[in-house]
Image (tube, rainbow, N blue to C red; front, side, top):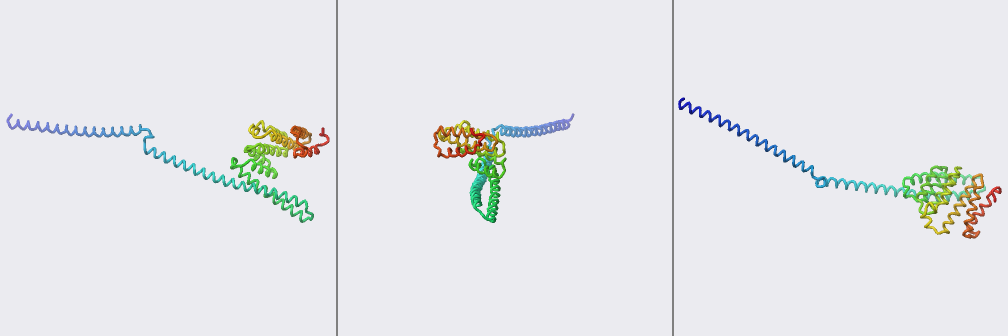
Length: 303
């Protein structure tokens, strides 16, 4: 081989080697770029994993969102409560007005009855009859409105108010609803007077419906008040407790006059025994009432 041929062969070999090295270098650079990209991806994944593993209470954005939600909920609850209280107060005031009006109408009815008894001419009698009818219509309407209101705010209504509404409903013939009002009156009773008044009122309505066993059960509850409600026993002196029991026995005796029997005698006797225990003079209201009721006892029941 000539010197020129040898040089060409060497040059060719060197070129091939150089091109191979260049390709290899390019390949290495590509690998380095891929490794760098993979490294960035791994770093990003590690950051995301760390963020997810971080407790929620250490995330400012989460805490801010929760605080905002809590504040919004509190303000919403407070606003609803304020609106509810305002609405209840408005109902409470309206109920008071209705009960006051019912009481006033009762007085007007009584006055009309007294005046009509004194009337002589036909025109006068008709006039008082129309007035009385109009007043009774107003009573029914007001009693229904009062009952509707009272049952929407039962905790804000006093036992006395429930009693008054029950009385009007009963006299208007709405006995079922009247009985429900007496239950509310008993539940809201703050003292023994309110409690026994509510229970005895229920008994009165039941006797009027000729549901005598139920009525008697209610009167017995009124007699057992100091056992069923020990707090009333502590709040009242013996003479006060005795007075309440005498009153209940007398009222029970009055109710029994509606029944064809002699049950009233036993309750009048019980009332008399209590009166004698405390040596109450015959001029006291209880003694006078007992004397009046004794005169109403049929001869067949007299002992």
